Amino acid sequence: MIIKFISLILCFLVFIGNAQSKDSVSSKQIDDKISFKQFIAPVALISSGALLLNSSLNEDLQSNANNLFGDDFHTSIDNYLPFVPVAQIYLGKTFGFTPKNNFKQQTINIIVANAIGGAIFTTLKYTIKEERPDQSDDLSFPSGHTSIAFTNAAILYYEYKDSNVWYASSGFLFATATGILRIANNRHYTSDVLAGAGIGLASGLIVSYWNPFKSMTFGKKNKTTAFVFPQIGSKIGLGAIVQLN
Image (cartoon, rainbow, N blue to C red; front, side):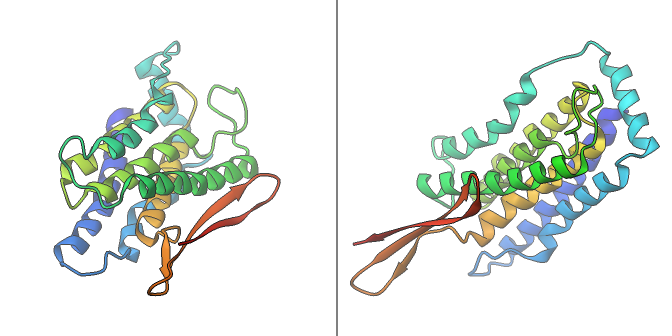
């Protein structure tokens, strides 16, 4: 019951978002721009997670999961699944698929998108302070693992959706599996996983389509290339590297 419930919600909402993306492709527009329709899935996921938070249904779903998988169930696979889409991004060309960006830009997108998603879910964790199902700490909402998984899956989708939609969408299978296993490990509630999926999906979409960190060239003969990147430390801000050719 718990697997069907979570899988249907995640896969259906992700399908909605992907369908919106494919609509923009089929329209054969010159500019590959992001639209508000593509945020239907992220908003629905985050809203569903927020509504389930601290509800009796949330507790019932967790109890059903514990009964299904067993109280002693434990696996560490969910620590690695979020990064499978990253490997797929880099290996896509090896399999004969054509990505939208080169290796450098792919790496920038992965780092920046995960930095944005990480900043959001970390802030929410320390603000909301929801206790985990296993009572190990109060950093349950939202699920960071799920957020990372869906961030990387969204970037994978953007990179290869025009080349092979099945390969591009495969990352969402690993992302969904990550969310289910976080619940099975009794580390997260369904609300945490849904919200994490929405945050990750939104982070991946924003960086992939808007892409404000892409190199920019100025002038006709003398070219200046600028790279903008986030700085996270004692202070949060933006940094830039300017290269004069």
